[in-house]
Image: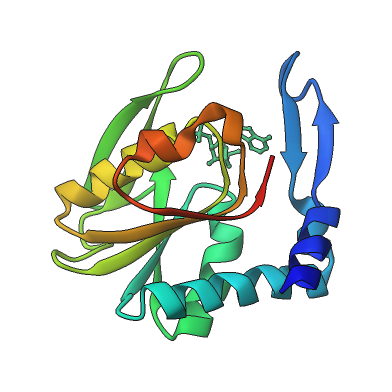
Length: 177
Ligand code: PRP
Ligand code: HPA
């Protein structure tokens, strides 16, 4: 387990001043290029969910990098995968929640039949920063009457206190900065 976490940490690449000055961007692309590292991520998420949330019924991935890790985990767990997208990308009846970003606003959206009332879900994304995106997604799940068991992220930026923003829903991260 320690070796897996070390390998994952080695495959996260920092970029100074991206996408804007003063931001240290943590790039997960090297994880995806290394099958051993990607397997390690999936292994550790699977182990955590099996131990902590054995009743899980659906993995819900966040746009866009939650889509890279979510389906791999869902397949391991033998459950389905649903997408939460930035507004305007999904056809048919949808439900959406607006949230504020560092500058401006965004909206997360899901198809009305994407998650069912009472369904036990885990949310997954690549990175937790301020927690705005995961918080809005938790609100969206509440509106759909789904039961969010927990949130999974590869990377957590501790200074930004995202886990506090998400509140009562537990967060599990593999690498912390
Ligand atoms: C990043 C990241 C998370 C979110 C975290 O996505 O992948 O989804 O920001 O930030 P927060 O905790 O402050 O909400 P981004 O908004 O860059 O969108 P993208 O995935 O479409 O690139
Ligand atoms: N990397 C990727 N996505 C992000 C970051 C980061 O460092 N900060 C906020 N969203």
